[in-house]
Image (cartoon, rainbow, N blue to C red; front, side):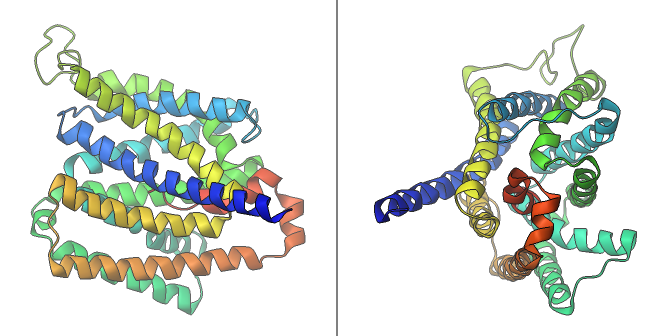
Length: 337
């Protein structure tokens, strides 16, 4: 490849990384704005809208060759669809009733939770250095949480945040095992089970949301005042979900899973900063210190995880995975920002 071509590739890779950082951070702010600014508290309905857009976006990405869609028996997909609905709904509820900062701290907590669950479920224990990084993350999260009076006084928010972290970690482990069992990448699984997830959410919406079938009063889904601003915010949050998926493909395809994980740390910093500047999150020096400690631990943990993946025998990767899966598996297994 010529020097000019290398320069063009480098510019494109940089653009893709910046694009991914922006859209992955923006979707958190957009969702929080839908809940807090426009008072659209209908979590199941918003999750259904997002899932419809996700299915449409993944179908487009499959059509344009970003990955090869795979037909999988519906019964084998149903548990995954249920798990997906569970963790997405809980994460949205957590964002709805918690601050952006606490929501993101609980996202950081997914990695050590995966380690604990894998030990309890499979007896799998990482090496001493990786365990030390997990301890550092836990110490940072504890300091950042207990020093925040707003979080401490919101017991329901703490319970939902912990539940969202637990279910997300469980889902990641489960989805990883299903990838091996069904010989499918996470992209293929997501595209395959989103129709079932849409159907499940379509059933859950009228069960858990105040619909207002007879009395379309304020506070009901049908009685909500869908102003142009509210509709625009909902649409933006849904479209950003598609752009996050697209940018993830572009980043990993043009760089590596290590770059994608490093980019993820930038997103965490931006989301935490955005919560402070846009949504008036409290940020005492003690909480800032706790977040910094957790970030140091999660960066160290991520680097060791990626190094382990890279050091695996190349022949095993070639024989066991498709080229698309080789590019995407490590990056997509990371906790969502």
